[in-house]
Length: 276
Ligand SMILES: Nc1ncnc2c1ncn2[C@@H]1O[C@H](COP(=O)(O)OP(=O)(O)OP(=O)(O)O)[C@@H](O)[C@H]1O
Image (cartoon, rainbow, N blue to C red; front, side, top):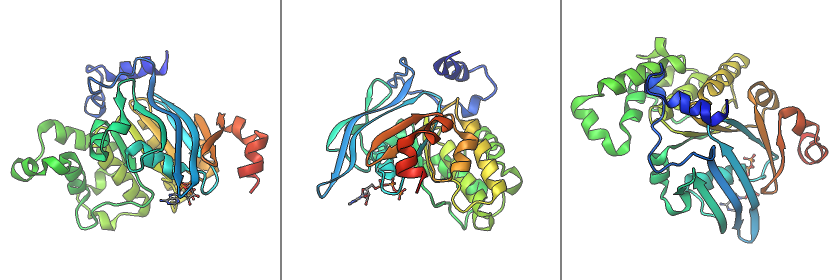
């Protein structure tokens, strides 16, 4: 079964994960099995090419790890996908039909691309429940939430998300009282309330305990399949524990791509990154 078939199966409404199966917008064409196309991207800052003729393709439903030395362009690449930075040249497509370069940051988020930054940005004085509730509402639809609360479907989704991120027992605790790892999971849960089809996750395990790291690996692995997950991370043990395909960025381009074993044994990768 191809990844796309698997994704289509997950999308069937008679399956158990009903509330967590992202709705595929009608204009998001995944018929080629690719959810994200970055082609011939170049970005310069004051004449310095932070991204240099980058080509990257993310499959529907895959978990991709992006690694590379400091300054390789990983953050800039994420910024391009989310519309924060516009490239000088190249194209960025979400599925076959959505040209991300013609969309604003909020439009890109609404189309189904969620981003988790390295530091957790939960509302510390609100409970876990309230954080998820606010995330369900989204910025532009908060008024209905204040007046009538969550819909039955959103409530079911919230319960499901709580289970996935392992915070059911903490639902009425203030987010500020959670451990660092739990805050990171809560923020991933907040993104899940928006049902993204592509989740971008920046250095999720920085500062986590070994146990939290393992739990995060399980969480991200479980999210792939029903959605695509792109993880930027420096921790090689973590990458090895979750990775399917790994992309190594160097000086703004793809240096190598393959399994963790393949990239770890690649001479160029050893030279410019792993041998550091
Ligand atoms: N707004 C900016 N203005 C000038 N230079 C920038 C800007 N943003 C990024 N750069 C430069 O572009 C290059 C790529 O930076 P980027 O943050 O994308 O790398 P990275 O792979 O995410 O690094 P790290 O692993 O340290 O987070 C770096 O040399 C950085 O200094």
